[in-house]
Image 1 (cartoon, rainbow, N blue to C red):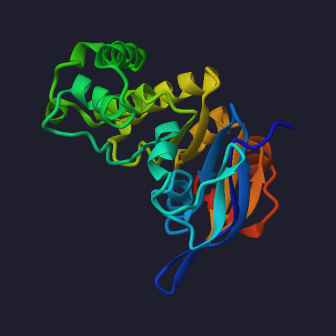
Image 2: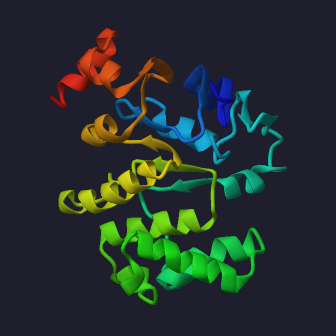
Length: 244
């Protein structure tokens, strides 16, 4: 088995007196698509945000490519350049057009040449079906279009890992499919993806691995077939009943 590309080791996360992640150790393989599922408030998004230090562990450490990454503030920016996140609320800059949104990160954070980044951004906007909107304002786009631009923006950073935090939860139901189809294409190309999602059909079809979290703990961790067809834990069974 290959070495984990990224790992949380004995990680706990507390907000004040509330402990939301409880001594979790979990690693992720390169090229693997992992879906993290669980009830609201179970710690899914907090776990995801610790993978690129948008949240720092209270205890334990993040290890990326074999290197501990928990020196607060010292290497978070360089980590985020390689571990990009797509948020549920898009987080596009409304005063910039679609192309500018994609170009800004690599040119300002990574200091890459603008011409090179612009060509790359156009390539990824084409990949997600948004080339006709390169000069459009984000304010003129539908939710599904905004999320596809957000994915192209993340890809323009040329990350090793893409994190998705419930990327379809803010979308109208008829727009969900266009975003999931882009994510399926990325999975088929071998992108390392860690996805917090409530789209069980997507997890079942696309994931190599599914993790079920409840009350800040990993309850079950296995293939989609193991988790969805043969869940072992009572809490997993109860959770999945509502999706059947």
